[in-house]
Length: 270
Image 1: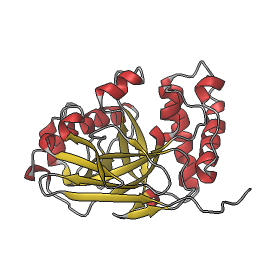
Image 2 (image 1 turned 180 degrees about the vertical axis):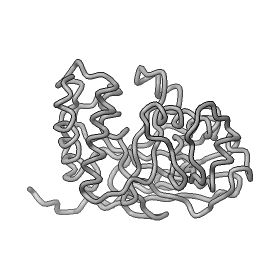
Image 3 (image 1 turned 45 degrees about the horizontal axis):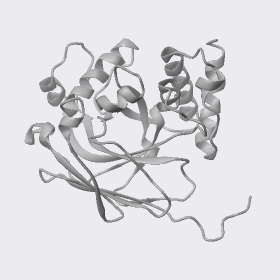
Image 4 (image 1 turned 135 degrees about the horizontal axis):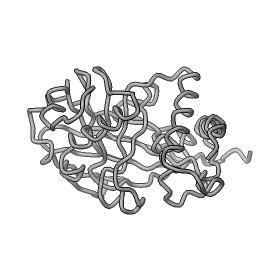
């Protein structure tokens, strides 16, 4: 792919995000796109968000489950960036029309208290560098009307990041066995999904290790104060207008809730 296309495609994705208007998948328009092109487009998209006044506060890890990676024909996860302005409070109601194809995922968030700027880290190193862990919901959203699973489209679009909601319980990382933390998801009051932290690459800190190495590869190491969404315990659930989600965590981590506005009864014909 021609590098001159990177800022053009990054701007196209930014406009789709701003106006909640889907666009065509890049992998269909540019079949020669490679993963390195996708990350370069993501960086141009990131630049557009910063120019619009948003502030990068961390990273997200996607495709942490083996099944999701196999489906995407990828041998490792992917990553994107978090923006401070995209955080909602526990129990937030997402306004109607503020997303295109929202899906809800359930995970843990790491708040770092030390830089992760060297290679070969262990899970204990990650926990030592973590100020606290809390439960989280991530809302992912596809900005394509014809996405069919190509990882380059996912990566270009900031790993489909839309927003996130944090729980009210924050714990020190050594206070609980993260791989044993259980999760039960209720969708409109009915139990829908369950999983454990072991579903995230065997241990949630393992994803942070992967992210540390990848960020060093691109010269953007993780820094103290950053937030890291470490990957979903389970598959996600597509959200429809009027839906309500509650994720209940074990080990006294509490719960995280998010709701979606109902569609207006008399939508604007325009």
